Image (tube, rainbow, N blue to C red):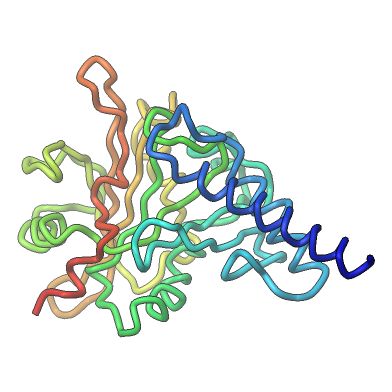
Length: 260
């Protein structure tokens, strides 16, 4: 009887997890439970980590760092970096608070987990991180997408990197059919440089309404083989049917890794 109850409990838990994950990735934002990611991380990953030292169903839980890494069901490689504290998204005042965690550096650190899924070393310019605006997301828990850049986006950034400066400026070429603003960061790591704060500090319009913003961090290799990053941002414009979803610059099939 005890064994039967345990099996039944495990089955219910598995069904709950499956329904949550499916809700997270429903194609229609209205069909998704906007708290599904929060429940997966808070009610499953964190509890399992504390109880057994295992992060399941996440691939990583860093309790001290305050984040988890979850495999997204879309694509073979896509990961999500998710805070373990309740944080709505780019609109949350927490992301601009003094001393707030730099979730972007943690997301970049997850490239090691990404390479395990890709089963190969991944050039930094093939990798991108993205967070969508409140209009381009279906989940009300902050999550940074980690996946390959689209090949056309990577190539456009590579071809025009000399025109991207160290302050935010509007690009004069499109990415995925939209005009983004961009800035360059030098260095192999973000370190203490938090893209949320760099955007708010460099663009008063963005600071006034961060929820309208999408933000992308693209790995880059500049002239002289110098490692760095290109930050990209865009405002939502609902009148033009632009929800500001920087995830559009990523490719969940990871075609850049298949190209010769």
